[in-house]
Amino acid sequence: MQEHLTHIFQRLKAILKAYEGPFTPKFDLDSKYDLWSIKNIEIAGRKRKEIYFAGLIIQSKYVGFYYMPIYTDTDLKEVFEPDLLKLLKGKSCFHIKELDTKLEKQISRALKIGFNLYKARAWV
Image 1 (cartoon, rainbow, N blue to C red):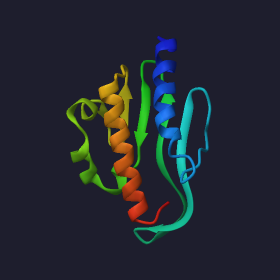
Image 2: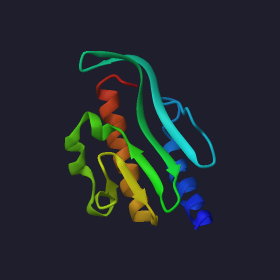
Image 3: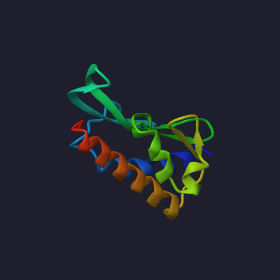
């Protein structure tokens, strides 16, 4: 099981790594990876020095894919295709237990949409 989850993690990490440059990882480990925009910004009147974009973590039975743009724009939920949406647990964490090319494409698409949202708001 752990080997299977590590494989999923590595495949998803490769997709997220494409966003390094505009985003910076705080954790780049074998079981945890995340991306942050390190920039002075203001969100809803609050000044911040950084904002979380997306991340991965291997849990005991799944790989958690965290997608933070959903917090800034709840309408983004509508862009998720049913295969991906059914894996959403809570507000921003997807539990990935199996990964095929169709799901990879859906995750890639969500990341692109989220990146464009952050870019439009000058958060990257």
